[in-house]
Length: 509
Image 1 (tube, rainbow, N blue to C red):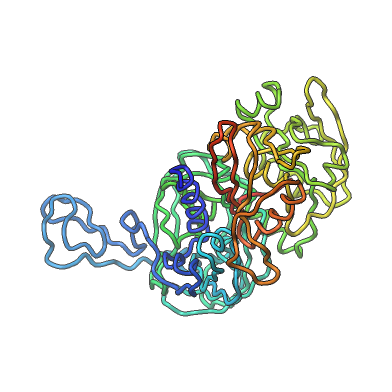
Image 2: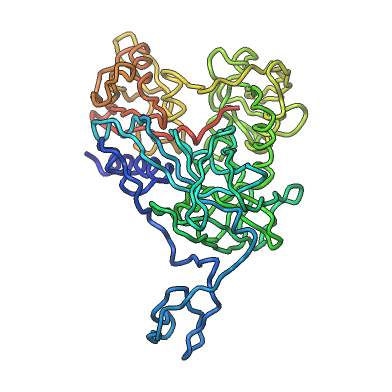
């Protein structure tokens, strides 16, 4: 196995383990065992209890953390551990710990192929907060496979909760629970988060049992409109240097007046915390409270152009977005849109960011007509797209999946081979130095899911597009898309690697 292949597999493992926000024993669950609710890795060193006293070292006067027995500055041994003073902030009563119990199997193609077995998640732990009478919200991914949901207060009391609605596009879940004595936290809408603003995030550590106290971490907003981090289909996050240990995901970010300005992400990206702005939370709540009416879609993946893809598609500098893939039989396909079309305008508004495009479509309904302006080579076209109802699980098939997930286009030859036609710059295939003219020999895939065959992944030869269609059909699971590709290069060497993607990361327009 090549070193690059190992790195590819490790990245797939990180995607699944980090994305689910479950405790470390989840790895054992990947091998087929039930996953117990156990302590997660918590970066608690940077956190302080909300009940923390302003204690200082009697010698050097440096601040002391609650529970400290030594001064971290001078090393002086304290006569007694630092005690925590009570903090009666009203915001604390509005924050609860979330435990979602999963008693049904959740499938993962990556786990099935890697460990030769299916797996299931027993529980996922996170945070949540109250936004109205009997209304609690959290991050939707914390409810993956959930069959029973329990909310725990800081005092350790437990309250059952039920799902009112889930907006998986934005990533917000609304729960109903009767929790006496709680304080609803107001959303700050109409006043966006500002770069440099100091915020406080509240939540619980990712321990297997209720911790008994809420944790608090403060930080500064260091970036805006962050996306492409792989948490939800619609990503328009603010970035903060506040410490976000596992378990605090789903908890609220508060401003100096105690208003909710965002929700903590359930996944930390290389130590960088992300927050979902209150404006997107409010959009999700409005949609859920209105009964989750059917949403519209165009049926195309749209991405922001970089220098390499701009050169690949021959698009001028004034075009910011490109259509990367069109779904067969979709409104986009019916309107004649193609992969590589530069998207200039939507209803007369410049197409500048993916979140703004999603925002416009969220306000539309099936049957609405949307006029676009697209650039195709030297020509500017203005097609009209009639939007259709959005599928529950939109899926690409066959060669389209290989192109989108792996960045490789293939074509069948009369001699019974599948030859690489093009490779997308920056893709997994490009990373492994596969080039046009190389031959796709075989695909590592499962046999089928329907018959319960979880552990029969093996390399299977492919000679036609129909072979690819059959293999790709089993690459999709509840959580992810994953298959292996083996190529023969023009110099005779062989290269194999896996293409894996966590499905909550992506959302076509």
